[in-house]
Image (cartoon, rainbow, N blue to C red; front, side):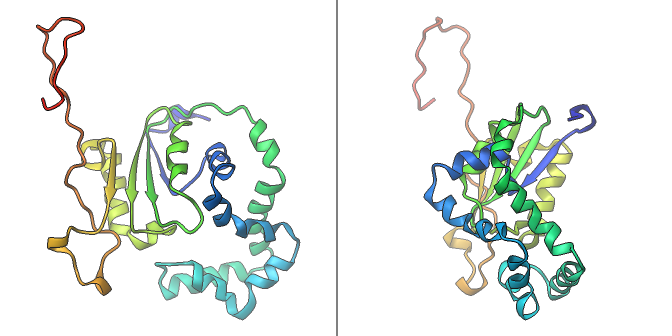
Amino acid sequence: MHEKLLEGLVVINGVHPMAFYKQLYQSEEQIKKSWFIEPFKRPDIPEKYIIMKDFALFDQMHKGFTSDEEEAHKYMFSKNGSLTAALNYYRAFVHDKDQLRKLPYRKINVTTIILWAEKDDFLTKPIAKYNQEWLKTSKIVYYTKAGHWVLRQCPDEVNEHISNFAMDEWQDVVVEERSLTSLGRRHRAPKSKENPCSVFMEGVKKRRRPSFGFLPMYGFIPEFL
């Protein structure tokens, strides 16, 4: 990887192969969320199922997409070979998983921000943390109410985080981990209009403990300071 050519990396509910497998083999929830991959191993049948009733499956999956965007996806995947090419990604992932684990992975030395939606129908939250094991410098922003298509559900919030990150304004993005939740009770909108992308900013910064040079090496500082 030509890391010197990259100033930063943005990951949006994406997985490092080893992070995914680590969670898959220890989480019943992740196993359930990954069930959809198994039928894709069969040739032809998945394609026939997905195109049924004008790609009705897409209407269920693509939360946050406009009608025009949905129609564009259906048009694209109706082209000869397009859907098979997409499904082959999962087929290779399943059939060659032993080979994936044998690759000589190393930590990626590119400053990275991970934007992670917790209500993902396909991926569980711990994978975001496991991704960090393969990144030398990284931060996580959690969208606690958004789903897999967070870029479509919360375009303004996602774009703002990416812009701040690109301008090196880390303090505006996150200190350690920021949890983006619905607004507090005082500002909460009616339930039917609740915005899954509302941001709760309070209490995200970790206080830096004061440094006292006059203390001995093993001096004790009370926690309340």
